[in-house]
Amino acid sequence: MGVDSMAGLLEDIRFGTRMLLRAGGVSLVAIVLLALGIGANTAIFSLIHGVLMRSVPGVRDAGRLVRSMRVAAGQSGSNFGYPDYADFRDQNRLFAGVVAESRTPLSFAGGTNERIRGSLVSGNYFSVPGVRPAAGRLFTMEDDRIPGAHPVAVISHAF
Image 1 (cartoon, one colour):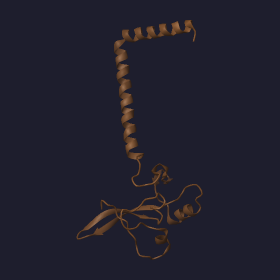
Image 2: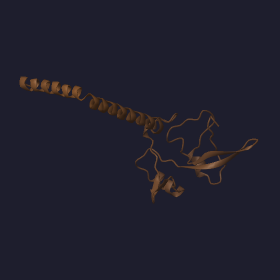
Image 3: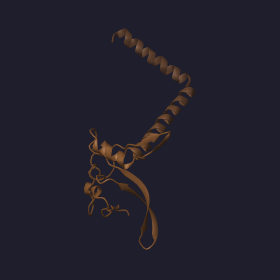
Image 4: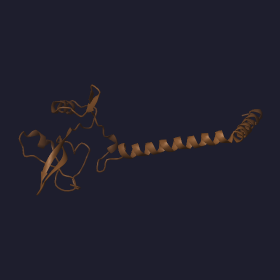
């Protein structure tokens, strides 16, 4: 940078400062609006990051998990059938593993009947993300392969 261009830059900065001081109200409004915009964007990002991008506890490499949903006719949902899942699992060449889950309402009878939310899942549901049980055992692929086998349930610590 030459001496002339440096002098011109300093003169431009002085001129800009004089104009901001002369139009104080407009400058104040612009600064307040800019601060509100930055604050709102920070709050929204923090909320989205906390809800959608947080790490899943107990899962190895949680940042590498992907959830797939079928979208058709403007409606979205996880309505893959078991044959679709089996095809995806068996022909998978991209992902470390493919699991299936179907959420369903259940009943629990422990003195009184209580409605609870549960999921019907594939045998590799816990092994693909690397989840370990606190006690007992989790599902295995063998639980999926034997038709009419004894049902297996995994319950959470909170339950």
